[in-house]
Length: 262
Image 1 (tube, rainbow, N blue to C red):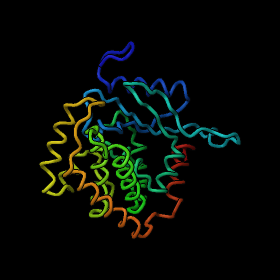
Image 2: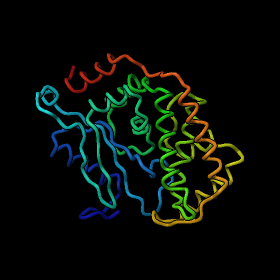
Image 3: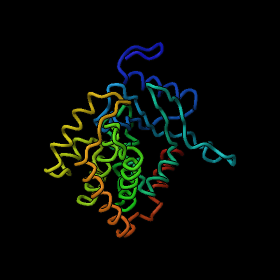
Image 4: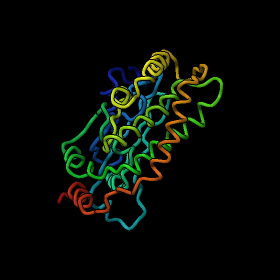
């Protein structure tokens, strides 16, 4: 790809951006992934690259009495969308079972990672996955996108996948009680009902040929399916008991090990 003065694979470009951020911000990147439609497997030809990363700073930063920033918005344009979270912010959100963090941790497109991050996730953070908040997240995402984008006569087909994917994630969580796969294809294989496969397969084929701004007629069969599932998962999430893990100690120990070196 060509980007400003760079020409080469996007993976090399992201690594250059990571090095640039580390030098200018005084950080150390632990994990950097693709998080958008390219990670989900239904990018349009003109989709941008949604790069998300987790970073850590030196110990003295965390001991400061001054207000400190816990995120970095590095670049945002038609090609690159790069932003990341401080390790402390990330671990706080793992404690809440933030579904987005589990997606970053399991993205099929990893631009850069470290053994430290792999150990932290596999030995500590993954145990903080909880079904109720994750169901609420995916139900809310599907419900919002459906009512904002798919009720008109002409719609962007990409928006169907911003609804179908979280619905299938809800089904995965209900049945398997663990983080859902990031790839839409894996979710379809595991969770989509046989009667919907032909319609969704045709929708995906059409979407992959369309640009981000193209519109086409809404699909009544898929809309009916969405409405049925939204009602079901709203009721399920409301009835489910809170299953978040209350303990802070494992996360705090992991934070001290990475940020303080011990």
